[in-house]
Image 1 (cartoon, rainbow, N blue to C red):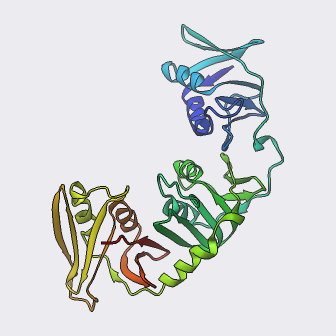
Image 2: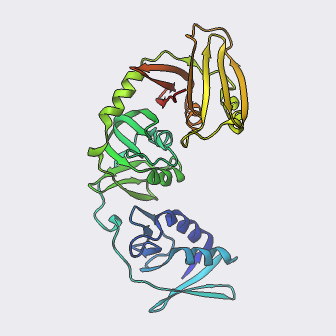
Image 3: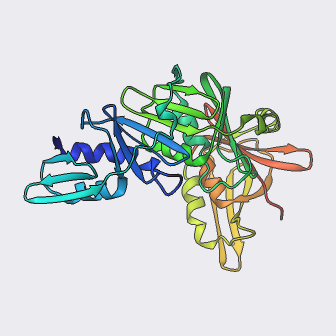
Amino acid sequence: MIVNRKLLVDQLSMVLPATGTGPEGSSRVVFENNALSAYNGHIAIEVPCSMKDIACSVNASELTTILRRFDTAECDISLTEDKFIIKAGKAKASLKLFPIVHSSCLFLDRPTGIPFPSDYHDALATCHIPGNKHLLAGAFFSGTSAVSTDGMRINHVTLSEDTNKFWINDTAIKTILKYGNVFTQYAITDGHVWFRNDELVIAVNRLNDELYKIDKVKAYVETCKDVDTVYIPEGLYAVVQRSAPFTETEQSLQPIQLSFLPTGIYVAVDTAHGAYEEMVEFEDELPVAEETVRVDYAHLLYALKRSNAIGIKHIGDDRMLVLVSETGIVMLGTLGG
């Protein structure tokens, strides 16, 4: 069978995120039913395959590496009883064949797709918190809300349309985001959430959304929605970045101080490493109550990327730094001192 080498490499690259060292067969790809698929126990991915009418399973990374090292436009692929044989020009390679393992949900009946809201991708991107180890890590969708938290910050995005309820982890979010804003439909089964379009199907493990403390998260969101905000002055993000060399880890956080003044926002860091301070002025003086808060440096940068207004909300004895955009809100827990 003569196949386009680069096209096959591209198809393999699409399913590689679903390979790994998990259950049996997770290091392999499966060619079957004119499709190419992989499954690692957490994520299953399928794409149409340029190799038609073939059924076999081979090691994913070995096949991809071999094809990438060949330099011909096409290659000739054939099967023996136990070998996957690739010929490219004068070169020849063979890989061991494995039994096809039908362990993923891709081999079950497919659920009916539901159109995605047009802004689902932006919501996932906003809700993704890298390195989140909190009990509620991941993104929770329900109705017009998409939320995430790591215990120190809460993201809330208002979607343009309702979605069914589901909760997926950050590894799944990162994989979905890797493909860009390409999915047009989703579906939900007891164990999986499906993302798909005409060419690509991804099924990720569904977390038990009954355990998600959505009422508590939404209570914070509702409390912070009426916060008095000011626009984020131009240059604040760059100023916060410049303070980075002077921040010091304090219980895995990097405190930075923001002082709200009628003339602007004053950024300051004072640690054993040194000190940094800079004023970011408003275009005109604003009726701002003078107040100072300390928040984590990385959390602040994360929120500034997604927002255009900022304010402080008092909740009992606590304070939250609240950053808002047209569609979402990010709430950061403040640090003592």
